[in-house]
Length: 90
Image (cartoon, rainbow, N blue to C red; front, side, top):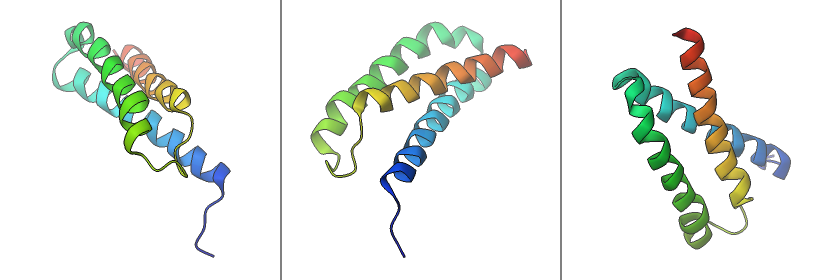
């Protein structure tokens, strides 16, 4: 059987959004430093908003596209998860 259930597909998709968001923000913190937060968080929020609410709406396959708001929210969860890890490790 080569299919994946809709529930599992959504779970994997949301986990990927969290992982990508946390990787981008944590990577910027590691490579550039904490002062980058004033620049990266607004740019990151706008970029993920454009990606989810415009690009995905226009170009993503409607059969596999989930909720744009949920995807956007998972990007934000990933970013703030990275911030939490950063401040715990600091």
